[in-house]
Amino acid sequence: MYFENTQLENVKVDQEVLTTVMGKFGLECHGAWDYDRMAFDRCYDVREGRFYLRVFCNAVSGDVGAHNATLNINKPAIGKYYYPHGVEYTDEVFPGHLVKECEKVLADVRKELTAYGI
Image (cartoon, rainbow, N blue to C red; front, side):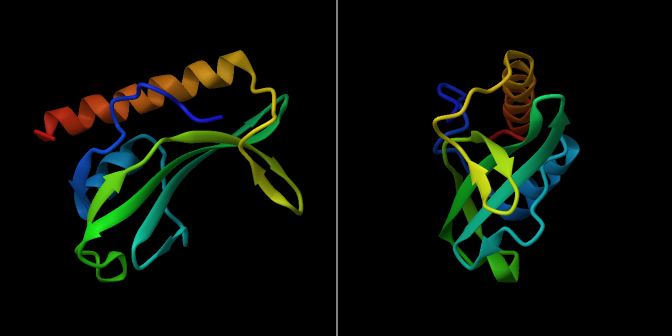
């Protein structure tokens, strides 16, 4: 499920600043990158299963591997994890309490980026 109207889409931000802000809210990038893309994840283990909040980004300049990129934030999503196949983002029923928590995290990220003048 993709989140709409987060005010994060198409925000451009320095990679190091974004990594710091995302880390404050439990969104981490552990190997989910290549030279022109990054994804920040936060894992939720709830009664209904394991879910991931994911914020996709792509580099508009610089190099992610060199830690000098300017990133464009794309539409965030929540997906359900299935072992061993991976994460499914569509055709799922997502718990309401989890969707609300993810919306709050995304709003907090936006608020923090605003504090940085972004």
